[in-house]
Length: 199
Image 1 (cartoon, rainbow, N blue to C red):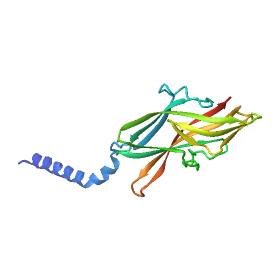
Image 2: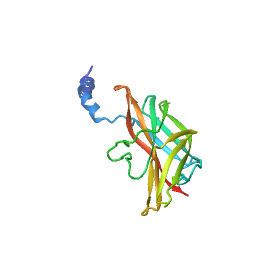
Image 3: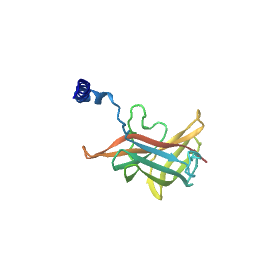
Image 4: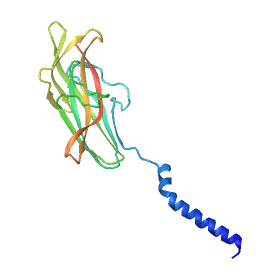
């Protein structure tokens, strides 16, 4: 070997050793593709579009919406959708504090969704209510969800002159099973329908 070949061999060995020694530091600088893990939840109108949501509600009339969940958590997930109904003065889920409504659930929908899969169901609902004699209040008797009648326990809604409606709010909160605690926890997602009761 001549001197040029020794220099080349020495440079190759030195470069290789430098890369091996520097590799832990390089790993911190390199950006590897990262997967974002999340769950999506949606509510679509009766034509499976983000339009024509029920709003003006007639007593005992059936209305329909599509409720959907998409799992992108990297594993199968066990969800519960808690269905709640409220008037304007009652507790609502809070997006800022990421807390659920304190109202009890009227109905639960339990579903397993495989990773990178979607679950969607068409839901029908109707409300049974009655107006007071002075037409200043609506007294709710029940809500029927997919042919299951659920009592509303004397819930009422006063006429709101600012918004010109008798307010009702149908809420779908998403809860997920936590394997470490063995309980369901609020998954910080909800969708809802704001409704107006009509004569």
